[in-house]
Image (cartoon, rainbow over the protein chains, first blue to last red):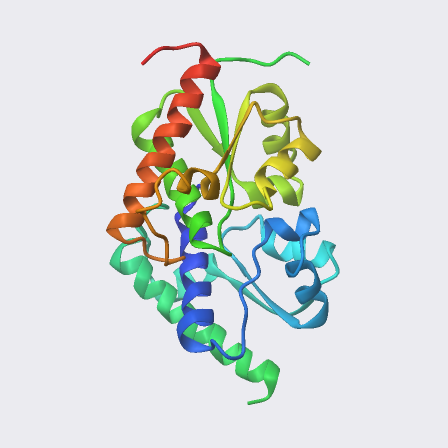
Length: 119
Length: 137
């Protein structure tokens, strides 16, 4: 919520589920996992999960693991910032560099999905 | 437990599931950055739920407003469970009923209509902040 890289994580996830892999992926909202809301809590137990973390706290990974999710891949945005040298502007508006960064990470995530699904 | 009333914590839905969640995030940022920058701080909901003691301690001592996108009310339920009952709860899907002409579609980039709705929600949050702090604006 308060970090630009968290917003990049969101933008990346939207690109994957809405543009790159709409048939092969669903987006799981993190807070419903903690309060046990369905269908999110069921999805993470039933399907392989890729977590996308925006900061070193790695909340997505911690919460999915704690709630019995089958984590098969992890994406860590700060690492990608170093790799691509792109810096998002702000949390509310990630700007052109943030969008470019989200697109690059989304491409990598889509490849990870192919690998998990053996496509 | 003493509640300190000089700052209000705004706990926003993380909003990946529905456009209303994105509106709750943007509205919260508007309050923090433009409408009430000196009176508010945000609490990162995933961090709070993942077990951050700093975030939870803040929400035990300072009054909080939960801003939820939908009826699951994750921000309200989570805050109540791990720190204490939020002083106020704002649910975007409820506010939307007051503005039936404003529609939501995107979870990612907000349209001009969705931005208008985010401003309306932000104004309601700011009004609650004033009410909690006993200020008239």
